Amino acid sequence: MLAVIDYGAGNLRSVLHALKHLHVTDMRLVQRPDQLSGAEKIILPGVGAFGACMDQMHRQDLVEPLKHALAAGIPYLGICVGMQMLFEVGEEMGEHAGLGLLGGRVIRFPQFVDRKVPHMGWNQLKFRRESDLLKGLGEENYVYFVHSYYCAPTDHDTVVASVDYGVEFAAFVQQDNIYGVQFHPEKSQKIGLQILANFLRI
Image (cartoon, rainbow, N blue to C red; front, top):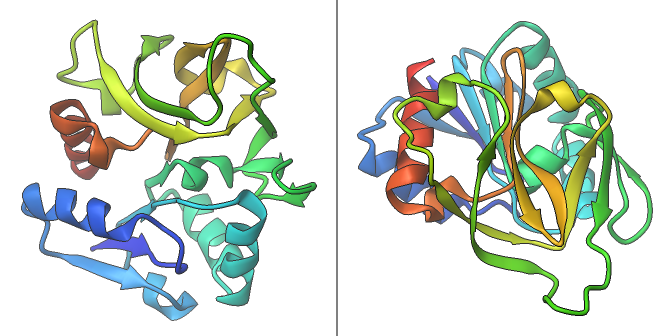
C-alpha cells in the first residue's frame, strides 16, 4: 500500500493525478498516525512554508510515526517542502526544527541582480551519483521548480542531483530508503512520471 500524507497543505491533486496516470490503485491518504499502518511506501507532497507545514504535521501527530516508519526501512519520497522537512532546520519565517533525518539547513536564495526569487520554472538536473530513481533517464533532464528556499546538506554524499540557479543547490537527495526532490515530478511531464514510476518499483 502506498501512503500519501495529507497534512492540508500538500499539492495533493496534481500528485494524485500523476499516480492515477501510473495506474496506482492500492493507495491511502494519511491524515492520522494509525493510517500509516501497513504502508509499504510513503509520499509526502509539499507546498507552503516550512514552519507551517511542520506545525501541521505535529498537530496531526504524524511526526514520530513517520520517523519510526522510515527507521524501519519503508521507502519515502518527499516532494518540495516534503524534501525540505527531512532536514534539521528551516529558516523560512524564522528558524523551525525539521524532522532531522538529514543533516543540514533549508535557506533562502540570496538577492540576485539577474534573476528572480522564487525560482520558478524548468531547470536542468546535474547528476552527481546513481540512484534507483534515475533509471531510464537520459543526460538532459529538465524538471519543474517553484521555491524560494533550498536545502544545504552537511553530507554532500546524499546529493543525487543538483541545479544551478545563481547558486548550485541540492535538487535531489537520497540516504538509504529516504528520497527527496526539490522539484515537482508531478508537474515535470515524462521525466517526472518516470521518477515516480521508479519510486513505485522500489
